[in-house]
Image (tube, helix red, strand yellow):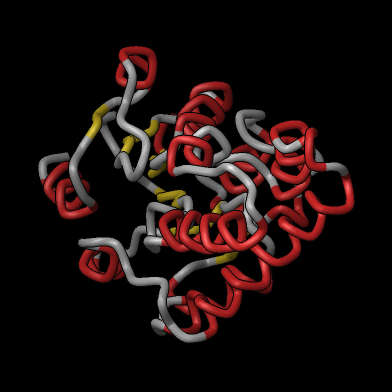
Length: 220
């Protein structure tokens, strides 16, 4: 990239350390219900929409019956929301510093997340970041979830920037694949899932934290 005119942020695992909370909530409920579950189980579901997650859980736990699986899904979600409402979702390193830098440089930014809008707004409001983003693109705004490029195509339109001058920040496999499908440059900041050779190839960089994104932008 020769110029960055706009930034698209994923949220879960990129802005907030929410993936670990979702996992902890699911593990707690699974243990209480006597259902086999592990971090490896959770990792395979990272980056998909709520609807796809429900379908995946019904398939994963098919031996337990639809009613019990639905109870697991509902209780896990309620437990995660309880933890979020208590402010347990911590910012990932470098988030505020990067947002402040983008504000100084007058580079517009949007959040494009597979999460639902109320949860996105709640978390951003908790840390005073909601007003720092031009807009939010959420699960309610798309018909196809990542790795489909739709969410990033919409976000780019909201930014009113050229694809080649837009930068996506992602932590998940499906997010990076969606960015590549949208033909928009992406930097991967891995969270729970380490990058594969395929993801490294599709990313312009793979970095340790958002502090590294600041360094990248300063060198443009």
